[in-house]
Length: 364
Image (cartoon, rainbow, N blue to C red; front, side):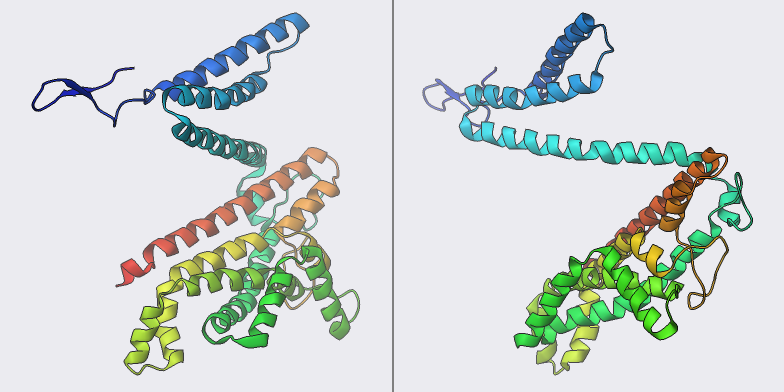
């Protein structure tokens, strides 16, 4: 380790630079990591040679990463001190946790793309499953049903959730506000299948038992979506500085106009992001739609009449009710799963674009 020195202005004696003394080289963490992985690789190589089995690369990398954490802490303690060593230890733990969380995500993405690409063709997006057995067919009816029911759920949930959050932030005081907050918290933890049973029961009371329609599925999704919209919008509205409200009040602007012209435009980017994320959260629900909307093999454009298919239910039915050949049903299920993931990715992309272009700093 090299310590930089400077000459004293009067005596000329070397003075150690405290900013560079007692620090590991920048390449030290990578060197320690590679050494730990190499040591683990040698151990696993000996085990594989002794047992006659295959080499476990995943185990070698995992054990090497585990060896790196105490190693970097030990070397940093000896050279840099306990405080810097603790910082490196926490950094290694956080980085390791992030990489560990990325493993199933990357594995899932690779699996869905590789298996869903087999039926990711024009027929899949232009045909339904009406009069189709075995190979062929598509998911046009499921895509249309998903978009219609999710859109109807958004039309129901966004006004209710946004107005509720405005009430809680701008007007809510006392027991009523605390009661609304408590009910929103309770709705957040409601299982999705309970929302489906509730929507089915409500429509069965008015339209008769066994009634399954697209609007019933939309109502079930809205029960799951409303608390997410309320919570996300409430947090964004609370981030608006009170100085902006007070400046508007000082000019004689009514409170409702202050909310419309000042508060909402300031927080519109965060509110839109929360709404998009809530839509992405409910678009993949299977249980409530299976109960409230049912499933069908035909295209249905009317959410107020007859059953309606959705992509999550389509994936479930294709996998659960395999025919001959079974590979055709499994390929359609994976292709539908890939389509659903792409829709969710598109919604998240739209949310990020809205947050970027409609943020207050761009609108001033």
